[in-house]
Length: 484
Image (cartoon, rainbow, N blue to C red; front, side, top):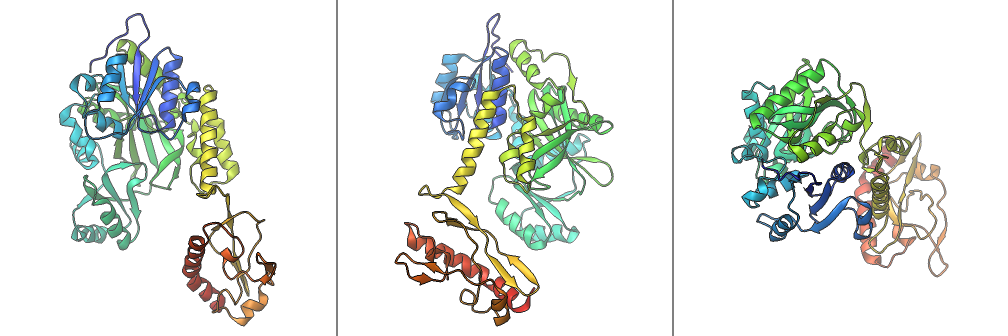
């Protein structure tokens, strides 16, 4: 790795792919230490152009990532003369490998060509790690449905994984044979291999930090106490690990990184088996999404990156303080999960309030995303409608059905005219249907939702509601007839 040291002045750094909050926070941390930060990214989710002034980037260039050299990025590098280029996602790291050699050598990390196939297919990396003495899950390669049948015969449940996966993308927890087949069919179209790993019921741990020639200078290890999707998804909350788990994770991470000759940020996923042994399941060759946990756990990750950029010395080692909980911002507050609204709001406790502009920007983005989900394509707000069905001895509520909210919300009772299979007893116990009026003031009963709430796109909306009604009809008919 070759960095252009800035001497007595402040160095410039280019962050590649700034579509994640963890990247914005890294930019803030570097800028607060005097480094001039620039961004080269695909069209970002955030911030919009009118808010970029409050973000720490000195310059901003957008261009989709392709599979060829980028002349605009080359011109940007020549104009800025950065001391370091940090790819902040796996897509950005792989894209950097297509750039000229004098640009690649400034990358942090700068991955040697013999190591690159191991990152492009994690199955190969796990196999190499087993040879280095790191425990990995028992797995079966899947190349056909016959291989799937053999893996199923060995026992369920299974974790079916693609060789390239980020978070829950490319990972499926399969409890039935049909789920294994569907997961294999879904992942087999990707360039990486597919494997079926044994499922271990223990907790998942994250271990990550800044490595220099394979040695962990600044290191964090913690248990993922809240994940979404559960068991396979992103970490929403972590609790830093204590001994003896911390030392075990540190040793395994350094073993892998030393064999990769790794210099730069990276993180690992480990699962703790029922036998008390950690097994290495994934490697992230970048700054990970929950890296903010290192600040609360007293790991000087960002200071180490800044010192390494300036003078090639990451500073004195730091280790995470055990027992410190961290709720990942903004995932914990805004991303889909099964948590209550009040519990989501508690995630603001661990927001990086030392960077108020970033927090405010993420809150605006999160609220805007929620509103966008609730707004139709024509700018009309949509709210959920719960349709109750009253059956003797039980009350069943169907899934949510979105509707245009021009008129106030009110419940619509399902009755015999809506579901012809409903028994007379079920209809008698149902609440009396509310008499509504059409546009001409004539009484009307809500046979389908669109008869009550009109939209400009009448026919499409009518078809959508009718399709939902037909999908729900068999279940409601069975409930109305049998009561269960």
